[in-house]
Length: 191
Image 1 (tube, one colour):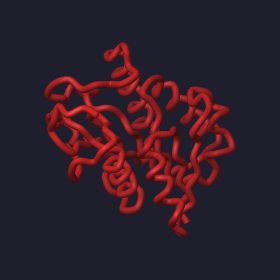
Image 2 (cartoon, helix red, strand yellow; image 1 turned 135 degrees about the horizontal axis):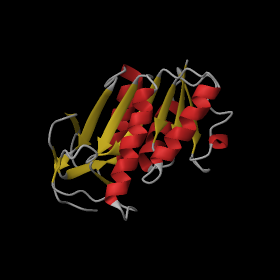
Image 3 (cartoon, one colour; image 1 turned 120 degrees about the vertical axis):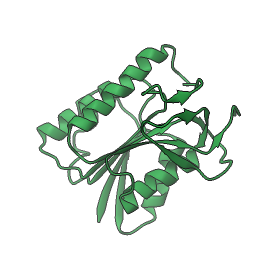
Image 4 (cartoon, one colour; image 1 turned 135 degrees about the vertical axis):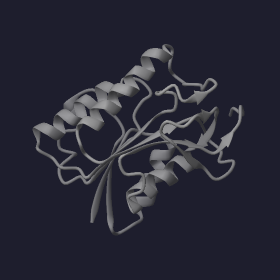
């Protein structure tokens, strides 16, 4: 049985939770509230966890990851995979401007995202980074990935598509040690 821990509460997180909660070969837990920048938020939740998925953000994800990994290291815990949802634009790969809801200082926000990914990468735990374009509620078509280093058009991705790719990464081991942008459509459409 694979144990999964979901961090944060979004529509995509709920879809992932509902999917794995209905499968006998998985045990899923979630931490949806608390101060994710504090170690005590994670204590008692990480033992025997195989996969950790972060839906946290948008702000202070650098501090969230520092606290999470401090507990992982001090408890000598061995998750086999970290999946982190970040933002497209961290590598200046977006062709245009994205919206970052809840973010006033985009430069600082992107630095926080970059540092969180650095913390994950330096842990040497297998990871998957999904860099999200504008997140929308309604799915418009099938999503696809864009590899790290490739240009990313301004576009949209739905919570449903995000959940689909997270589930695929867990079930099939897809995108191991990769950073992929997720997008459904190249569009300026807003919801």
